Amino acid sequence: MPTRKSIFAPWIAAVVLLVLIGGYVGAYCSTVQPRKGRPHFRVARAHLNRRIDRILTGVFAPVIWLDRQIRPHAWEPKP
Image 1 (cartoon, rainbow, N blue to C red):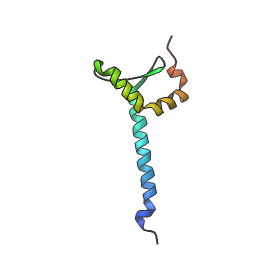
Image 2 (image 1 turned 180 degrees about the horizontal axis):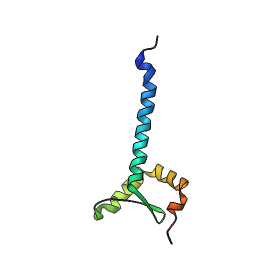
Image 3 (image 1 turned 135 degrees about the vertical axis):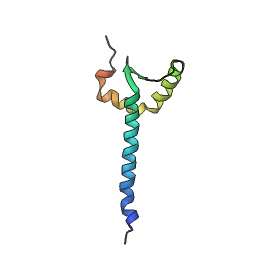
Image 4 (image 1 turned 30 degrees about the horizontal axis):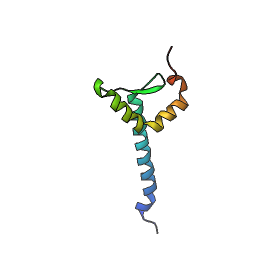
């Protein structure tokens, strides 16, 4: 006879996974601004921008790729 814990474990794991993915995409959407074909992240301190931009570009690389596939018009250079 299966226990109550084993029945709900896959559902709990699925909910946790969806929350983590939602948080990841939400963090990306709240920080990125498409600019001249590459991402620009809003960061408070100007002297850290380049270094933090590189780090965040690496962290968000999968969602940046997906964003470029879904919204190519947002990534085109502005005239």
